Length: 102
Image 1 (cartoon, one colour):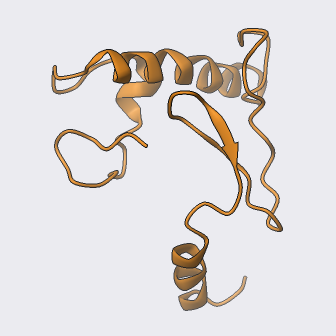
Image 2 (cartoon, helix red, strand yellow):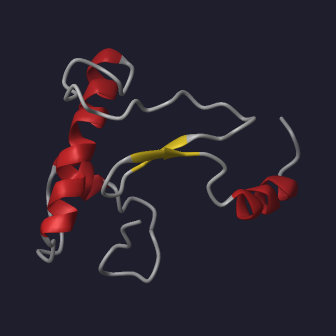
């Protein structure tokens, strides 16, 4: 998983440069450029079609699954892209336990 160069962990908003294809700090390596190139079509599809899985994706693209609370599958933007379930489940369950159900 990519960690922003200005932090020792992923930070709020750190995906924005990847979504727009801009390198805010000027320190992207080829790996970050490739992740951004993979990410941009998904976000563009979401904005244009209301779904990240749309016409702008390559035929070999990974389908971004709809959220399902039973398996919590998510698209992981790393190289290669992958779908994983229950990412950081214990940490998420801890934070969920602090919030009363809606």
